[in-house]
Image (cartoon, rainbow, N blue to C red):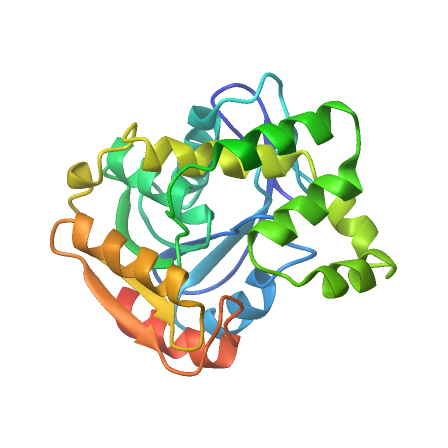
Length: 253
């Protein structure tokens, strides 16, 4: 797989396919190219765009230069923009929205944004502290379970998932949960000023998603100058690529 080199020297693994204007897809928590929604979505978009998918740092084929800093994730995305020819539209999923917004505020190379349910629901100091403690003790499975609890997964469902072979994939990237917590805080706490994002932007919510995610998406759209808010009927926080792709073609072409 090809890589780009981020500003701090970290190698970021990526792939591209298709023809047309550049579109970069940014994953949320617990996802990367080999384990997440972006490859299936890219397959449905490549007739309309040159689609770039990449592994956020600490995941998959990307490096993980320490100490972590939220600005490095912005630089990773901008390195992909440069590889795409210097300009690209960006679609983000969940906490990836914080990375996309920071990149758009930092560089004119991000030409348009579509954000699916960025979970800007405010800081949770107890979650952040508990996550840090579990990761420091190398209790990676418990860290993943804490995240699942926070996003509303029932305890019995978490217990069943922990018994499955797929859980090991999440344990391997459990440390990046702290990265997602940090990038979300970078926006929620005002370090990224949404009023500085002066490009076409649309924030999308799933019509079947929990109310707190729909409300967060609506409030994010209201905070972005000139942004649109869209509801994708019948979809949850894990949208069907067949339902999402046509909307992205309409919004970003």
